[in-house]
Amino acid sequence: MKTMLVFSTLCTLVLLFVSAKAESKSKNCNEVKAAYRSKGFNANDVPNKGIHGAPLKVCPRGVSCCTLEMEEKLSQQSHSDLKAPVSHLSNNLQTTFKQRHNHFDQFFRELLDNAERSLNGMFVRTYGLMYVQNAELFKNFFQALKRYYVTGSSAVNLDAMLSDFWADLLERMFRLVNVQYEFSDSYMECVSQHTDQLQPFGDVPRKLRLQLTRAFVAARTFTRGLLLMPEVVNKVSTVSASPSCVRAAMKMLYCPYCSGQVALKPCQNYCLNVMRGCLANQADLDTEWNNFLDAMLSLADRLEGPFNFESVMDPIDVKISEAIMNMQENSMQVSQKVFQGCGQPKSSMAFRSRRSVKETGFTGRFRPYSPDARPTTAAGTSLDRLVTDVKKKLKHAKKFWSTLPDTVCVGERITLGDDCWNGTAKSRYESVVMGNGLANQVSNPDVEVDITKPDIVIRTQIALLKEMTSWLKAAHSGNDISIDNDEDASGGGEESGSGCDSPSCEADRDIYFSTPPNPVKPRVVPVVNVQPEAPASVATAPSSMALLVFALAVLAPLWR
Image 1 (spheres, one colour):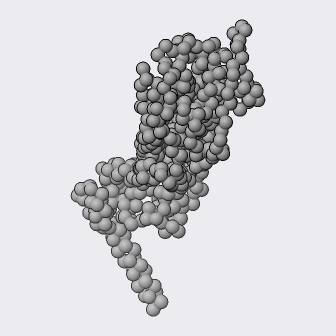
Image 2 (cartoon, rainbow, N blue to C red):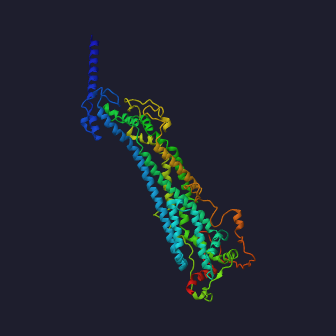
Image 3 (tube, rainbow, N blue to C red):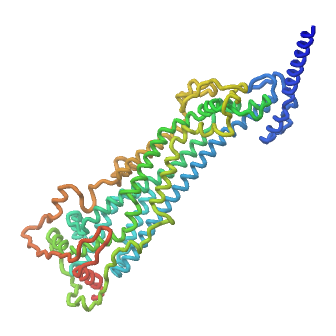
């Protein structure tokens, strides 16, 4: 009897406890009110007590603190909440590479401006009036380089521009060192046609053409790659979530509210499946994105090494001056070859040969290049520093799209372990986690994904990345293929310009032009170089013969 009394008492206590707990649950909407209000909604939408059998479309039915109207509003909120972390990560990536693009672009532009100013100042001091009278040639040279950097081969054929520059410079210098003669346009055309054989400037044009072409193609292509990155990220990050994705996000984020468990977070694997379903198209970008980044990193290595834009542009004034001095040293030999190949020119009636150089007082001397005296930076930095920084950022950006779900489903957004929201209750999430990409979502248990309809915007960005990657790979070899295939690319080919490397070119370097009938054998006076050979980056002072030639050239107009 006593045992039955105890049992009856225990049953009564259990019933009272269950009843109290159920009553507590049915009244547990106050926390939901506060949470709902914190989202910017009207707390009066939330019922005071849980509603039995609320006609909800997404969340489990039963005792619920949500109405259909609340569910619709929370569904809109879930869309924003789903987009927020992805937008945050995407915006950071956009900002990072917009800044790097601006840094590189500013650096390259300032380096071009600095090189032009340096050449102008150096040549005014070194060549004086002769340079001032021909400064337009060099101004046009730098303008063409700047146009190529900005607009590429569609505006400037870099190889042809350099060939024209050396041909124009040869014509001007040939006239100056032969002021005692008159030359017709057709005669000068003959001279220009044989620039490659004459090699009046030595090996400088060939070397400089290769260096400039490779450096400019690499610099311009790399900068375009940096510009493309934030554009791609912006386009991809604005892709709208599908209705099934929004529904899944609502179920994951806010159905716990409806059950009165506002603090309950989704299970990590549950979150991963939802996010991988929602970001399936974005993940498909990852392969071409990583290929693009690998090509950028490879070209960055070139910028640090043989295609270093800074090491080419910084001493360009010295290199061009070295070419001019080669012409000075070899002016007599060049002139004799031209006279034999193109014919003997007419003497100039205005030329007066009785004035001596001594009377002119010419004191021009070339000033050798001093590394310590030259600026080593542009835009307050150096190329090595810029490349080192951007390589770190490029490596960090790899696998950005495929790791987005893993980046989102961490920290306060999820709960580790079994005490988490699995989509229906507070319990372990049992489903298998899907892989990344559209094809892997065919069996996604939480998001309905149509794998037969890839997103058009993302597919367009994949195509752009693939095209840019091909340009980067070509630039790595010194070639510019960012123009129509039927046009001559301004890349690193070596088939034009002053001089070449093939055996046939080597054999032709000392061959005279075809000569007219009964030619008079010219008397070629060799130029003796009395100074030891200088390093390529340091130009030597002109010889006495060169100074004599320049004195005649500069002052001849004053004698008339």
